[in-house]
Length: 377
Image 1 (cartoon, helix red, strand yellow):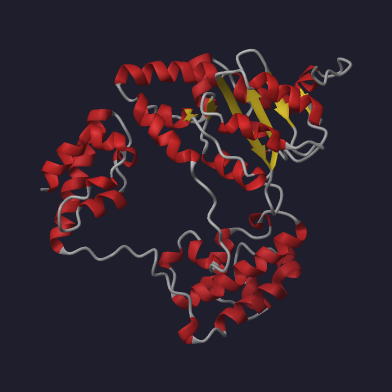
Image 2 (tube, one colour):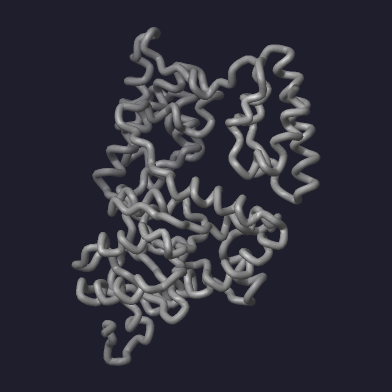
């Protein structure tokens, strides 16, 4: 029934690498009411990231599904879409994007244990920290950054992958009971539902420099140089099939965009540029800087979107008042301020006119909608 091996590696018995085994697994899982999932990808090792392993645990078994084997992962789609099966993930945001990107899979009835632990006021909500605190189980952090696209998978990697989901259902049950006691279960269910709908935005035709961390502090000319440097790095990364940060770090790109070296001599003056790096990429980097410096003044990139609108004095006062309220509410509920209400929401609520309570999530409206209404009015 499962791909049992001749006993050389017990974890291998849990590996699903052919369509027949996957179809049988899907049949068994279809009758479950709760399943735990996790994914491993290779984003630290390749230019185009992909899902390299899907772990699933029911109450009776854990399986490792290999998307790189000759099988069609879409066979799992009906399980993910089935509203009568609860799907447990930890920190599901990335997984939702990846499942949709690679397989067109959408998830219904998601419960995110990371969100749940945040709404219980846990200060450490990483899976490793939670499993250690609640079950005394240690996850080997070495494999978090492993190259999951390599085959065959080592027994240690398979053991690690299985640990990731084997305790998730037990973790969910503990968290669910604690949330119910605090009257916050519906809050987490709503937040989980929102995460289930996240998708990666298309970046087609968008300037790379505008989503570079710290771009809002850079001058337009520096952004033009940075854009050329980012394109150069991206092309090198694509050709070498590695993530861009493996070619050049963001810090180095920022420094190059600010210092705008015109010659090898000036490149040598940048302390993080090794002679090896200059030999390998120096010419291309100087050409990129020159191209950025040649961009006409009226074509320079502008960081409009990132700029916060200038608030008028009344609105500014309201935002300050709302932030004080949020601080107190956060202490009262034992939640991070960002969970209570983010800055974008507070600024929208502070706008002139009747309070826009429709911007609140259901749980926020129930928990403190009236209070906010009174405060703004």
